[in-house]
Image 1 (cartoon, rainbow, N blue to C red):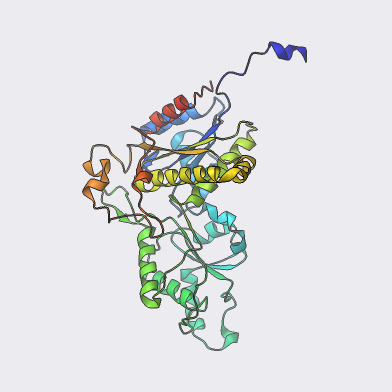
Image 2 (image 1 turned 180 degrees about the horizontal axis):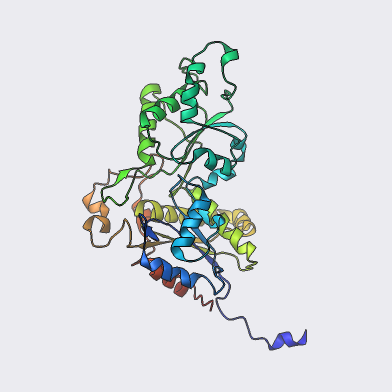
Length: 384
């Protein structure tokens, strides 16, 4: 016991009190091409054994594959081992919606939808295609011939991403909503509020290798919302919206950051999240919105501040914008969208409001390597 007093104080910044949330596309890759700064940055984030020195979570609005596949792609790309628990797809928060897992869910989107749904915990997913094949049966008035897969009242809809044949999906989702899970029955006015709808990824458009933006899932949602409203005169309501910029996404990401710190037995509480992204409307807006939520939670009286301490909620979420993706400082448009596009044009989702303060990044840096350097400097963090 006596030799303890000879040990000097622990050097500053060996244990992290912060974590990184990295967007993937436009920050680490463009299409399939790696951004050179990414490998350099990640060499600084791991020790010689390839273990992370700080908690890191990848937050993408993509949703058409399993997180393990994304983790493998990232490991290959960055040259460091990435586990699936570090990867957050737009649909990842659905894991927390356990009360839907037992229910029958109609799933819409592309990719291995059944695998994704089951990986998230859903026991009875039905794809639009399956519903289409069963459709003739559903027109039958005879109750005995109704397949028992569609149980009224315990039915919900999960929108994973944009489908391939929009008209088929739009038609069948509307059928399910207007008949409370019995498509083929007559539409009834009393089927409102409609059965639960959960949606992932609200991006209106996305940029692939072709430089003109393509329709995203947000565009599909605009179609669905407007068709529903036109037919019923009522608003389509979402039980939950996830993917950036929704609060749910950042809450879940923070939960993953904490789990990593716990796993590594890092005692230091995580105070600050640094969200590194290339998009003002998703990455910056989302991080700033979450930061505002964290500020409000901590200031609404001592009781919630106490709860925040107990649950260990972060104090801040800082937005760091890189110039390797959607945002480029050279184009006038990106520099100040508000001058070139009138205020009335808002590309966010219907249920979010445009607020100029939310698209102001805390920091602008050239690339992800510069972002890591900046954060280490701000945090006075010197692991090696």
